[in-house]
Amino acid sequence: MILVTGAAGRSFQSSLASRTASAAVFSGLFGLATLAATAQTAPTMRKAADERAYAAAATTADPAQRVAALDSFIKTYPKSNQIDHARSLRLNTLIEYLPDHTDDLKRAEKDKIHSSDKGFGRLESEAMIAERYIEAGSNGILLSEAEKLATHAERHLDEAKWDSGQAELYKQFKVALPQPDKLHQVYIESTANFYLALADVYIHEHKFAEAKPLLDKAYTIQPTDVATNAIRAEYALANHDNSEALTYFERAAVSNDISELFSDLAKKYHSTLVQLYRDANSGSDSGLDAALDARYNEVFPPPFTPEKVAPIHSGHIALLELFTGSGCPPCIGGDIAVDALLAQYPRTDLIALTFDEHVPRPDPLTNPDSIERAELFHAIHTPSFVLDGTPLSIYGSYRDHSKDVYTKLQTMTATEIAAPSNVKLTLTASFSMAGEIQVQADVTTGMQEETTKLITEPKPTEPPKKPEEAKKESDAAKKEDKKQKPEPAKLAPSPAAAAPTPPPVPHLVVNFALVEDNIRYSGENGIRFHRMVVRSLAKHADTGFLLDFNKTTTVDASFNMAAISAKLHDYLVGYAQSNDKFGPLEWRSMPTTMNPQHLYVVAWVQDTTTNRVLQSAIAAINGQSTNTSETAYKESN
Image (cartoon, rainbow, N blue to C red; front, side, top):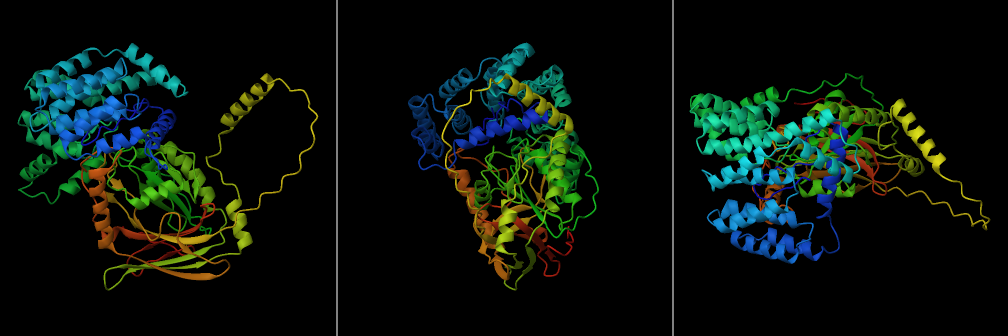
């Protein structure tokens, strides 16, 4: 399963489905893996003793003391579900901060390898540790040990054994094993990591002739992987080909790290990238962001073009909420699908909000409000989708299957937009003389009885099945029914009729989100531009400004950009130092400064009893362009 290895950590331990070509299998298993990982840190009245002990050890600031605390944890709680995290964090801490503790390093290496699953999992650990040694410090550590580990791992690759191990894992998760051709492709993609590890060892040892064929094999398999491109850039740099090195460093800067491999390489070589760009551009790096944008579009062209649709203009603007993560592999498909919907529908039909989460990796676009909103809907895996307050049973995928995610979302979104609403919402937003963002909403609500009917009407949570799928399920159900033996009739007194459950009493509120569109940040999953990211909420995620029924209410709110940016910065600094999920970490960057030209305010009317959203609106912050549930919205980008 996916293993986050702590500060600047890397892991070859990808999800058992993370390399599969089957989007359905991938997304389902990733959800299970993420659910399990998240459940360990879910809010409880009091964490178990082992979880408290691990959290205390992982957040110990002094590296030597942290190693000692992790040693104590491993000895005291050898069967804890945090034990693998503890071993990985201990090894990474030694490599990163105490590389001269050779004997201790060798012991941690041995413990990590022996604790790995037999077969392919153990080879993955060997290759991962070799790569950690090679990339430690400025010139690597324990090079001979790294070569021994990487060579052993690469030379003992065995597809038959790998197939057997995968079959056991899929059986464990009760998911059908992919067809042999797809399983073979998964294996081939997995082997690229081994070629890269050994090639990197050879580069550091100046054995360039041995490194080149391994690099070529890895690049053929995964040309959009950050490690593949970064290590090819290292090779070019070592051979004094600065032009080629710049090309591959640019590719690495915008590539993805879907197997959690070498996740800090892009950051490690950023200064080298900048210098190479300056050398090639008369000493200036002013055009670097634009160059990286162009490289991103070259490496990742749009996987599909959304269909053109006529605006619906039903008077109901649907709100789609995406819970995602910049280090989440299946969120690639979710992000692309939502981007396509935003391109397809005007904001008079559909508004989307993105809430980033620290799942499965730390994400610098996350904030306390986004975490709180996810908790409201019990969104414990990423990606998760909520449409007008109803969580959807739709999962994510890689780029090549993102259209499948889009198609499902589009089907449900079109239906929801056409659904009735008895709420009208007008929204304006502008900058005040003091620089604050002033927001005003006029909300007209309907009768309570009508609202009760709207919030109690069942909403679908997944798209309708295709006729052939529905028939297959029906036939299977009938076949199962025939197996059941009828039970003999029993005479029993008729129970008293249960009193009907009264319908929920709606409590309507309006809340506001300050949203930044098109944030440029290349996370581990390779998504470079992040749409409609929620930076702050006016009220807590589960509440808002109270509304009365059958009347118009005017609500005012404000956002202070400087204060919000400072709060985001302080939150990320504190999380990096003292979170109890990943241990101390370093952010690739902290994109906390907001671009005023990319800011919007979104408002929505929600019933706090059922979490149903009845209406939404968006406004650009320029004092002129506004959006309501009845008027058009003009994009300002």
